[in-house]
Length: 230
Ligand code: SF4
Ligand code: SF4
Image (tube, rainbow, N blue to C red):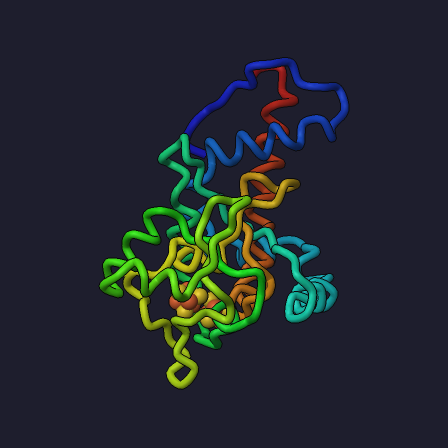
C-alpha cells in the first residue's frame, strides 16, 4: 500500500460495521497496487502459504457460476471498478480488458430479449455509418417511457454466418462495454459481469483465487483502522 489513509468519521464498534468502509478505503487507496499484485501472480504465493475458500470450495463456486448459462445474474469480480470521480481507479478495467477473451459465440447479440437501448451518441454514430437515420430507425422501436430508441433483438447487425458484428467499429456503448455490468449493490467497488456470457464465466473462474489479494488488503486496512495510532 503506497498511501496512508484516515477514516474521517468514527467507526462503529462492531467489526461488521467496518466492512463497507474498509472496502471503500481499499478501492480508493489500494486499487492500483491490488491490480499490480494480481498481474504479478501474487495470489499464487499467498495460496501456497495458506488454505483459501477459492480452492477448498472451487467445485461449489464453479457450479454456481455455471448456472449463468440458464439463470440471469451478475458475478462480482476481484477487480476494482472504475470510479467516475476518481481517475486512479481505472486499472481494474484495463486488466479486465487485457484478460477477457470473447469467444465470439454471439449469445449477447442474437439472444431474443427486450432489446438494446441506444443513446443519442450511439444513434448519431450508427446512423452516420449506415448513411441514414431512417435506415437505423427501421431496425429499432421507440420506447416512449424511456424516451429512447431500442435496437430489436435478436440484433439485426449480427452476422449469423461469421458470428461477427456488422457495425463493430460503431457499435452501441452497451455492446462495447459488454459483458461488464454496473457493480453489484453489495459489492459497489468491484467490476461485475453478466454470467450469461461464457467468456465472462471462464474469467470469473480463472480469477476466483484473486479474492485472496482483496481479502489480504482488507485485513491490513482493518488492522490499521483498529489501531489507535492511525
Ligand atoms: S456472449 Fe460473451 S463470449 Fe459470446 S460473443 Fe458475447 S461477449 Fe463474446
Ligand atoms: S450491435 Fe453488434 S455487438 Fe451489439 S448486439 Fe448487435 S451485433 Fe452484437
